[in-house]
Image (tube, rainbow, N blue to C red; front, side, top):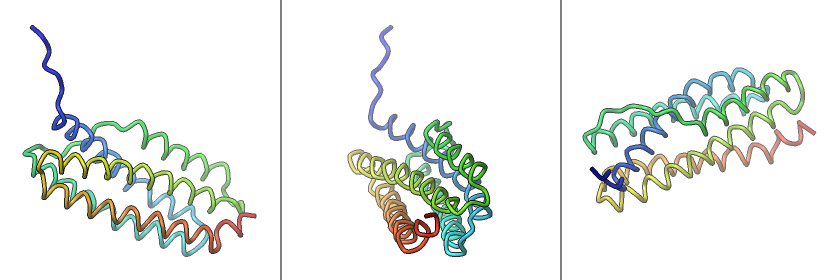
Length: 164
C-alpha cells in the first residue's frame, strides 16, 4: 500500500510542535541568562522576555486549539544547540568583560531562530485559511522582532563597548 504524501497542514502541525518545545526550553533558559548577566539593563531584558515567552506559549496553545490538536512539543535540535552555546558562554566567560556581549549574541541567535519559525508558521497558517492562528502567530512574530531590535540597541549602546 502506497504511503500518502505529507501535506502542508501536517508540516504546520510538526513545526508548531517544534516551536512549542523551543519556547518551553527558552522559558527555562532565560532565568539562567538573567542570573549570569552583569549589566542591569541586560538582566532586565532577559526578565522581560521571560514574561513575554510565557504569553507566547499561551498563544501557541491557542493555535493548537484552533487546529484541534493537543499542545505538545517535539524535540528541536536547533534550539538545543543554540541554548547549549549560551550555556558554554556562561561557563567560559564567567566574570569576564565579554560575558554580557556573548550572552546578548546568544539571545539574538534565539530571536533570529524564533523570527524565522514564526514568520514561516504565520505564512502557512494563512495558506491553510487559519486566520485566527495567523493573527496569533503574527503577534508573537512582532514581539520577537521588537526584542531583537532592543537587544541590538543594548549591544550598540553599552554592552559591546564594555566587552572591549
